[in-house]
Each structure stands twice: as structure tokens, then as C-alpha cells.
Amino acid sequence: MKRPVIGITCSHRKEHPDQYRLAGAYCRAVERAGGIPVLLPAVESLLPPAKFDRPLGSFCQGLLLSGGGDLDPSFFGEPPHPRLGSVDPLRDHWEITLIHQALKEGLPLLGICRGMQVLNVALGGSLYQDLPSQYSPPGAALLEHRPSRGAEDAQHRVSIKEGTNLHFLLGRTVIWTNSHHHQAIKDLAPGLLVSAWSEDQVVEGIEAPGEDWLLGVQWHPERWPGPDSEKLFGGLIEACRTNEAGKNGL
Image (cartoon, rainbow, N blue to C red; front, side):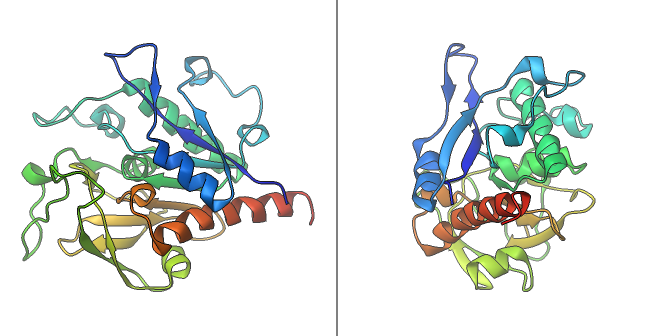
């Protein structure tokens, strides 16, 4: 079967207006899993009220929402918090549009870090704009979710709910992960379920029950080599292949 093309969202920084940016680790992880990575920069002419003039599935078989800066809180109906970081409303709007289009066409989706957060917002959920100042864990101290040493070395445990797609993919109920974020899911979007959480009860994994293959993880598997990360990207690629085989009647 042909290798599926995975569309990956990327960032656009004001200080470099002629550049789109994406960490190469995302592309390498997709390629190792058997896919072909393609970047999807924001296209203003395709944002609502405009419509896609061709199916998203005509040029990619799956969607990967990458990490990056903070989400604009206007997308979940809140004013900016004093500790809100840099935002890019154009990217937010584009990614939300891509999510709805991918779901409409039945394409598999994987959201990583910010990508998980935008999945939640796109479907009607909200975020903590700044965990340290807005979230108090029940009966525990807040973990260091945004350490200065970077995502490659930061470690904490994550519990995975049995019976979820994430549990099916990884085959375990407790894993170690890396972490590099200061925003997190507050109100879960209708229709989604929490599949993983850290010891301080911060949401670390979400998914859609039923037939839609939609997964979000708060950690950075592309920068955390090992079998758990390989299984996540492998799950995305396999979902794309299964999806294409079903469309082609194979």
C-alpha cells in the first residue's frame, strides 16, 4: 500500500514574516513511521466564510497538529490573561478550519502539545491560559510542566485510562513522558474523553470515542524516542492506511 501523506501544521512568527517554521523532529517521526510529511502553512483564502475548493484528503491522508505558541483566548471566549504568551490568530483559525474539514472527511488526526489544545478548542472546549497561576491541583503540588531545560529531558508519569484507543496503542496504563507547556485543557470539549492525565490531574491525553481516529497528547513524542512514541506515530499511519483501504474497497 502507498505511504500515506501526513499534513503537518507549522508556525509563522511576526519577527520572520517570510518564514514558516516546524521542528524537523515531526517530519522525521512521520517518515520513520512510514508516512510522507508535508507542511500545511496557513492559507487565508481558505478560511471561513470561504470553502475548500478541493477535499483536504486529495493531498493528505492524515493531519498532524504540531506544537507551538499559545492559543488566542478569543477562540474560547475569554480575555487575555496577563501571563498569556505570543499568539497567532491566523494559525489558530487555520488549524480550527483544518480540524473541522478533516473530521468532515473522516481523516485521522493527531494533536501534539498545542495541537491537543487546539483540538479541544475547535470542538468547543477551553484552556487554562497559564497553569501556574490558574490551576490548583486537588491535594497535590503542580508538576513542572514547562522546565527551562527543554522538552527532551523533562520527565513525569502519565496514567492512561484502560479501554481507550491510547491504551490500545501503547498497551500500558502508566508511562513516562516529557513536557514543555504552560497552557492546558480546562473544560473538555463535548464529545471527547480524557484518556490520560498526570499525577497533578492535568489532562495529558484526549480522544474521540467511536469511529473517528482523533488523538491528542500533551507531551512531545517526536522529541521522546522510544517504543511509546513509535506506537503513537505508527497508530496514525496505520489509521490512514485503514481509512484509505476502506475508501478503495480493499
